[in-house]
Length: 239
Image (cartoon, rainbow, N blue to C red):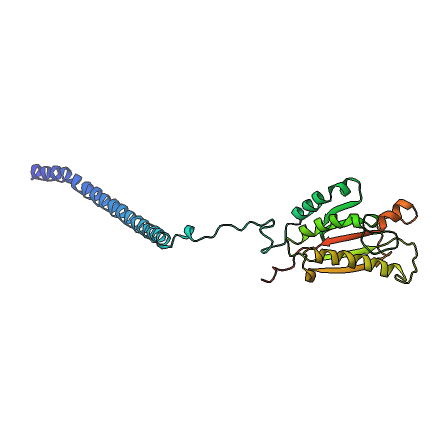
């Protein structure tokens, strides 16, 4: 009996590896099940991405080839002026170029600020003292400016300014009338040179907006001026 019990114990000890092996196989099976599940999820995601890409490329391929129907670009000195404000910097440079001799002598100043581009022309370049008729020598310069202005739809204000020297003539009772007449004369020339009259306005400020002192001859000369102000576009022009 003792020998048989010993043999039974030895047989049980020899078969214990089966339990461990079964546990190992179970764990291994569970591991592969998890791996398969993960790979299946990723495969689904990859399939979805792949199908989306294929659909996107097919959409692009099905679109018509527009390269053959796009018209050639329109040549324009200010290509974006109908979408946004005219590039005033370019206009300022063009005006500086056409008035370069007067810019060099200081008789014309072209400045840029938040309001727009201001072309300040000394009145002695344009008019005789106390007069509002343009001097013959100034016509060509103003016509050159008008050609630049006519390219763009920007609003334009022409301002007339005087010094504080009083005037009282049958034509101009005060500096108000003189400054307004000078501004109007420049506007009329611009219109004759091709600038749309609906874009322009003439303003006479008289002696009330000086840029220099009236106590010196140089200051009074600076104050007697006509200023062409090119304003930014507020909205795209009507067709």
